[in-house]
Length: 544
Image (tube, rainbow, N blue to C red; front, side, top):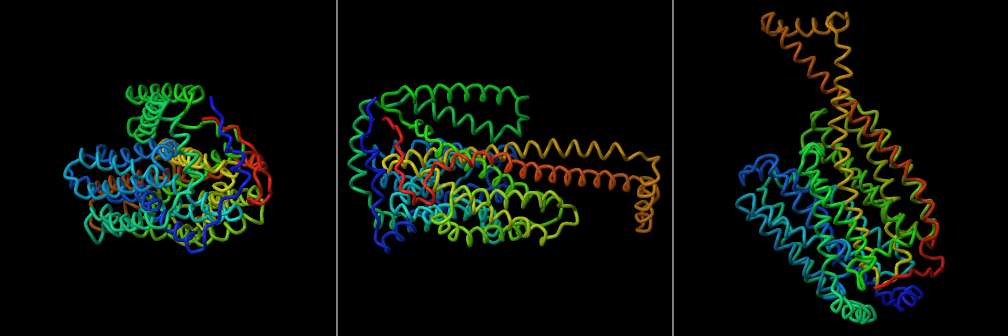
């Protein structure tokens, strides 16, 4: 293996500071693509019923429109640094942006399910490199003292995108044709392409270093590592996306995919640790700050995605909110995050990252605990109060975690690190959705059975309740037999709804406990420079 001597030099010298105008133009340019990719991860969900009717698919088949996109995304994320060295970071970003926009346009024209899934897969291939590349570009553009600001901007695109996706998608579907959820990406993507081409310029020192490493990569192309990575991640994501629908390990297909995915990923890790020039630099995880920060990031995103799934279901299924009403009720959390993140980016320079993350865990955990008290009488005001606490908490956590996790990474390894960071964040979100979706189904059945066990018709309270409902129905014109049957059905519906409420409350308690469990990981963040200003220049043993 050949060691890179430039690592220590890159750490010793802060990133060259761009001019004020150029710095913000670069930021605006690269944020377009990331924001579109983040929005597209959730915007399609609200339009699935309309899309299903247009392409003639069943409820189970149409989920592939989402699954294909996510599988393609995770396949590309860890290869961002590898592709950047071969073709240039700016070229990779522009090529992926073109692929994403072209895929979006074709999705709007899809005429059946296979074409829609194919075009969504192409769209995902383009979206996969946008997040890590933007993160790497911002880290290399902003000075060391401004890393909190840079990551606050990145965090707003990554976390706010999935939050506004359902609301935006619902508005488009209600007022226009479903295809516009894809067509809207075209003008925005074209504008982003020309802005990146005009304002984003790669650092010459980094380009020279990348050219040298690209020569080694071409001589020792890690094809087996790339194949193992793509197979392992694709199958893992399939299991996470489709496991609940197939009853998890009761399905032979899920079992087979899990075994093959695990085998491929284990073989991939062994290959990358022994390859002369690995496609993915797993040795970056030797840095405890990067490892703990990335893991915490994944766990935070898992809870965020799970709560973004649970709350709309709770509001629509149990409280009777429409899709638009539930989206509007969730907007305050998004607005709080938009307001807080720039301030957190400034605080990062003055307050230790561990303090900010700990405070964020307290806010987010308390917000989840407040949700555990939701009932059928809960109103929009109660929901807004809880999610605003979570919005403050997520802002306090995500910004310092994104900045601190990459604090010790050499500039020429930044694209590798951001690719791995984005990958684990995406997998964390998928795992959070899979786990909480499965538990919701199981907890609701358990709660329903527990409540039903107390509904003995001989009990005075039960007989009185059924009698009152029966009497009310008879006053509306039903005969006694029909009224009695209807009252029993209403009682079953009440039990089902109460069981669902108990299941949701139990999951919100679990989410609060998850934040408590990850608190010990904050200890490892102490090795990072506080706010980027400590002056320590830690060395990471990175090999290519």
